Image (tube, rainbow, N blue to C red):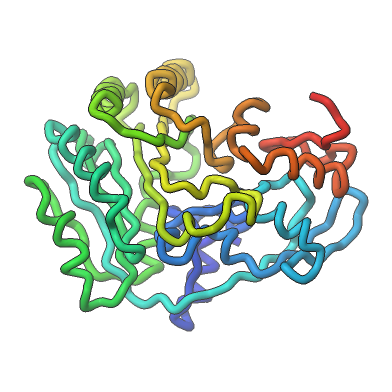
Length: 342
């Protein structure tokens, strides 16, 4: 099931839960890795809203995992990725969500440094009702822009006041924020990530964003090798940061900026060009990294998997020994069983 399908059914009753930024994303993979989305600051991660899950482990055993049943497995499923078994059903906590105010503010690329500095300073102060991201990308006509992309899901009468600092900053070339349905908000970015394209991403959490880091982001965006590529900063915090780091397998609870370097192109002959741009950009930003990464945006080796699970890695490895001792589920961001090396 995709988040678009999920949202269609829950919104029929005026309900929703945190789930993705693109409606075609699958609910299971996103949730098992943590799960961010437009409601992350208000209602926490998707995995924070998981009530129970049915799982088939490597030996064919069927388990129901919840806070009351097989609590260790439930802990691991909330952020541990696909390491423990095949999840066949998920039960979520839902929240009342009516119309939201969301969209984009587009600024000229020449103002990118000022917009990034504004975002750095404003995002940590925003109320939980507002999730706001900042991206250096291309407008539909191909022109490079810097965008503030957000969703306000609080009381309708407070929307103008909450969004006033965002809408009042600088000289935007377009203000596309408007009242809309939550389902429409969830599909806002669908067209930017069409099926059939070629993608390569790298990501890191950033614990500081000084002027030098902003300069490097702007320089990287100017040097991107495809007009479809982007550099995005996402700030979570809010409800997601009020959960202890060891309460779920997802450990990244300290409010930070998540830097996402995304290349997109069509021609396989250009693979090396665009992959090189992503890797070069990521390397230039490593001095500002907190040494953490979101597991849903990596496909690299053990070192990055350890960064993804941080303080919870050893506990996950121990549970892997219990539920998948032969490491059957290894074609993923793999945590090897504690008894298996390599």
